Image (cartoon, rainbow, N blue to C red):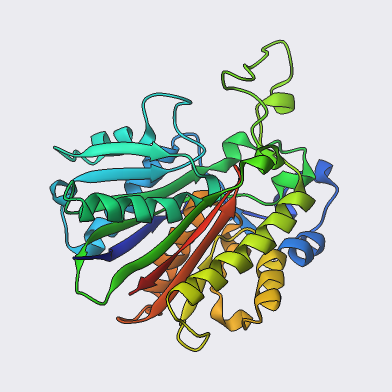
Length: 326
């Protein structure tokens, strides 16, 4: 049996924030942000646009494009680091409720920016194991809710949105061919939330921005991301006997243009192979790869038989990739 992506969908909040609209207290500029990150805009969710709401809307888009109904789904996987509720219920449970999907299991995974990569392989495993026939894999993030908007290191980088894929049985010779899922927990504190869990409970006598927002060591994350981006792309190509000419597109986590450019140079891969859209959407963590795939699909760029590599890297530290024949 072969398992592949039957359709992809997306949801982007209407509110679009340009670099020029960022708080003046950040002491930055459009020129600085673009030159250092490749980011020009980001979309910011409203109070009512929760992570589960965006996930549900992206799922509706994907289901419609596949010609399927909610009840055609057997399992729901939501990759997110910004769930509606800190612990329970899972955001996937809220998607199940909102889409009225009956007789489906659902769960969240917390693999940060590599979440969708992990989700694709988990979904494939559920189908190959006979647990499900069709699986919704969703990356959805409301990162604006965990930003310290006075911290230039993080505030300029992130945006909100959701992307979804419907997985199901496909023709032999197509679909998800291979996946690499890895972790380097020694760098867990390079990109993390300082408090809120059992190891570091929130101290409500302190300022929220001191402990409740995303914190990043930018240089260490950059070095890690360049290294593993190169490693994952190269390993997927070697394991699957692929040359550069064989690969039609590489769809990376949309973190930072400089990261992608440095990894491409190190691997001696032309930048034309990489699909990038961080200029419009910034870094949307687990949503970035499905958002890119959905945008590519709607532009008519993805053709049957195309060979695509995904590569994710992010907090945790997690990293990985997929080899997909469309």
